[in-house]
Amino acid sequence: MITPEKALADLAAMFTPERTAPGMREALRRAVTITELEPPGVEVVEDITLPGPSTPLPARVWRPFDAADNGAGLVYFHGGGFVTGDIETHAALCQRLAAASGVRVVSVDYRRAPEHAFPAAVNDALAAFDAVYDGALAYHGFSPDRLAVGGDSAGGNLAAVIAQHRRGKVAFQLLLYPLLQLVEIERARQPWQEGPLLSREILHRVRHSYLRSQDDEKDVRVSPLLADDLKGLAPTFLLAAELDPLVNEGKAYAERLAAFGVPVERVVYNTMPHGFLNMTRILPQAVEAIVQAARALAKGLA
Image 1 (cartoon, helix red, strand yellow):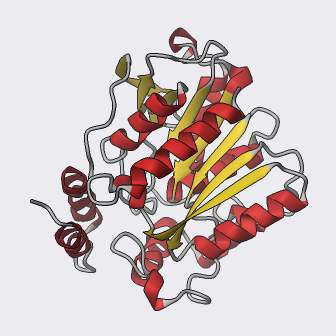
Image 2: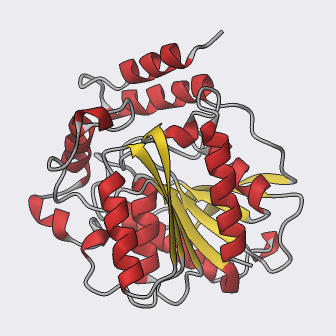
């Protein structure tokens, strides 16, 4: 029997400083087999490609049995600090979102660092969203009038960037413990917030791997929290984890959105670490949190 303590210890051991980026990616793929339960079924799962700025982007579509008649769809970007993560590591999460919301979901694989530094991931994310908005997934029922963006961690960063740069086209934002800035990664981070999937050491590695130079950290495509104008952005659901180094910046972004008149709901899951939504086997609260996020998504696109 896998205990929570054993699973988390195994997960932490997979992310050691000596690991290369490919090694970290493989470790995360293996971790999913330890930490994830089988998700509920959906009507259709299809691997596709979407047009990218340089090469086609791998993607996967989940169409739920009770897909909304209004064409509601979510363009999703996986987490992993811009270095790890892919469609497979976040497949269970995406399928759960689709099944619980009745919203079609497409998960997009973007180019990762350090092989492809900023702004490659941003350019890929924008291209994928534009393709879906322009009708690339119309045959699956995706409508440009009911299109949300979402993601967890680094994927939440990309979703927030798209919402800012495609203002008026995005109908809803689903931000799951998003990484919203890389300017300050030391201050106000407590030892009890250090976890197996995110720590000071990992944040330093993310910044070193993803950015071309220190100047990039203040670019709003890297740090959307720093954007001057948030007026007219899509209504937002922001899920946070109490034991997460990113919890304060998520709170700050929610407060800034609200100050600009953007409808925003922020929910904090106490005692949960960063990345807990990928731990449904060992943290029952993860299933509850995904269902809550899915219901907010369905309501936001109704």
